[in-house]
Image 1 (spheres, one colour):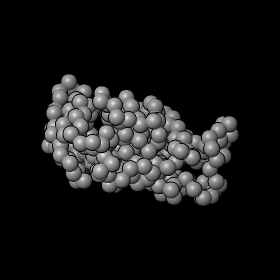
Image 2: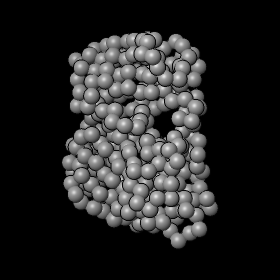
Image 3: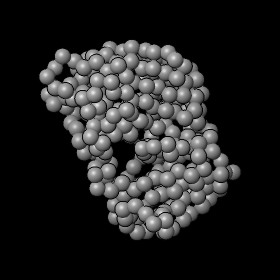
Image 4: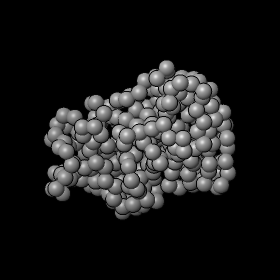
Length: 263
């Protein structure tokens, strides 16, 4: 069994709480979070699948860990507004970590979703990053497009967070799975806060195997669904985004879903 550990550290590195287990940890942390606090998830087995809940007000995250130590920084102030307002609040916090079960590892699922994704290489996948995020604001960060929230008829604070491209014509969004996966369907929830928003009429998916799929879209609140089959890919990039002929300069992506199985 893998040895697991969860610790709460302050911004100064002081340990506030810790828990450990062989294959599962259920931690209840008593105390209010403070700026700089972070949750440290540790395991002696990497390159495998885990299910982690960073907060009782958030979904579990099914993730692939490539590092022994994953640091999750508690969001505050501007960073917090892209999260459910109930998350990380109060003086009692529910945190869990376990190894994923075999049926979970072989299941057909949305391989893109990771509610605990953060900026930078944390060793926790899937991971989203982009060459632009509007004004560097949390409500327009790449991670928003894989957090599982599909509300797309407005923009700004949760639940309307999205990936914003700052009107940049060469904007690119990359989804790194961290391992090989087999996919057969991609769904894009483009932001639909009309008339504030524009929309994309064409885009390209580039895959880690070098293949490219060009797709067409139209003005819609509903998801754009593409039956695209790929085997053994490790990442997909969304680029070549062509806006509609509309006065608004603000197209954006609310959510990407990539359905399939682990490779």
